[in-house]
Image (cartoon, rainbow, N blue to C red; front, top):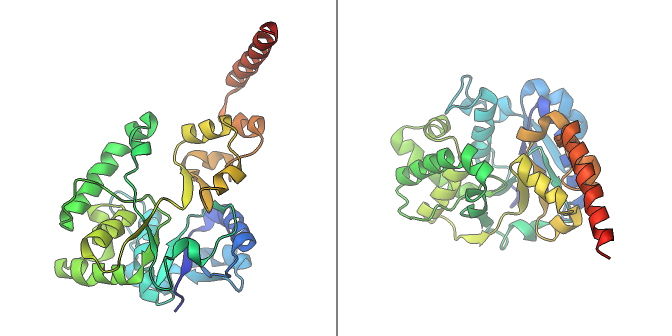
Length: 307
């Protein structure tokens, strides 16, 4: 059993994202940590070329098939529900004491190793944040915040975590196997629940972990801010591009970055940073591009006339 490994739950539709992620994983994986890539059996052949000494490929049916669902659960499509269940149940494989969950649309930005994710040989860092930056984002608040907050507070109430402060994370957490084992034995089993029942109750696997971590006290909490920069909305990515933030800038604060494919999928694997005109163009209509070009010309003329 490894003290630390990585978990990527993916599927055929994300293979091009996974290729990009794994390429960056090989480039920056200084401690030669192992990444476990879990996909449906039908997609194994698509992912087979990505397997290597540090990337192990698994079929989810043979690995954790007893837990998977075959019908929508918790308002999620089957694939999404099983993605959450695999992340929750991966500890049962005995492959890693701690595992960092990484998304297919992530890209590593700089050299990383054991010490980025672990406080010491056995204790992980835990990402726990209030997400106030998202709470004040008008677009995110209108589309996601109220429903997400209500669902997460249901989790807090169900695990009897009495805390006015809601600390959790969207993803990219270091999961500790002992915490999940306690969750199963001390929370799920007394209720005669399976993982699918927890997802049906509230479909936020990272919040189930975060709240049980805080409630149970199974391991000490060594808190960190997010290790991965996530652009949750198109507006957030556009603002970053407009500000000229580069991957080198992002790497000063994060080991990886995600441009959420939920809003950018039609554009393919989108870089987080780069040439502004090239990266901004796919987001904008021809009329918007024309207006921006005209505004740039006017600003240039204005600056010159002021000299």
